[in-house]
Length: 379
Image 1: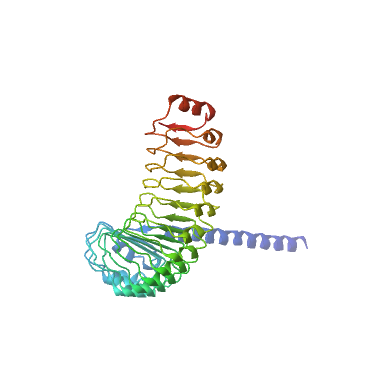
Image 2: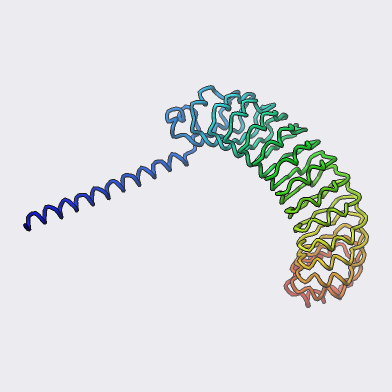
């Protein structure tokens, strides 16, 4: 009986040890797979020797004029990076059906190939100084979430850009001259960054971008803002600096969730009292303008933390600004202000004050330093 029990215990122990060995082997195998997942191949020849395990490929600095047909054998490839080659043709890219990310820098491409439409799993597309034309076929990429194009020759976008229903980020510049009306069809777009282009007009359809959180139109040639701007109910960040805008529509001051507004470097000579409606505004820049007066209503924007009125014609700050108890940074640089308003001494949260270029009495500056010991004063 004892012998039988011993045999049963021995068999049980053997089974447990065997299970632990199998688990250990599986874990080692998992680590091995993870290494394959993370490895970035830098040789197509090496990659082709391990086709099924190639997920990341970098073909930079290999003097390629075109993508070899053999690259299509890498059926599991997910990321492709190409920089400083001499590529003029990447048509074979259409065979990489599992590709999720493409980054192409400094090549000789004039356009993306029409075969790009077969990349149904593509999520990220980055092109830098490589192409001056985007084909209509880009509209087939329904899973695309991010586009970043930096090229001096790209002047327009295809109308099919509006088909990219999952697109969340669109960054293009410089030299773009227009935006198609179809841009308004991008219902999931959160970031539209078109800084440093030649755009003179925003389409009315811009107001249809209900998910948009950031709109950066800095350094363009805009002369006006579409009246549909107030439809951007989720907009938090609006950059309109360095344009040719002479007047802001009242609709702009109805963007209830706006937190940052940059209007610097325009041809504005006044700011509407409606600025006080932007209750969530935290940062306002109206520098480098012809604005002469700050509306009293700005004092209603009690969440304001940063205010830049430098290089403007402003000579007086209204007492109503004493309500800006959360102000952290204030730039009065090169304005027409000749004396520090009394309420400024009460802004206890102020950390950064720029008064360079102002003809202020030294006694006032010393008093500021005493009353606001934690504030850095540039003078």
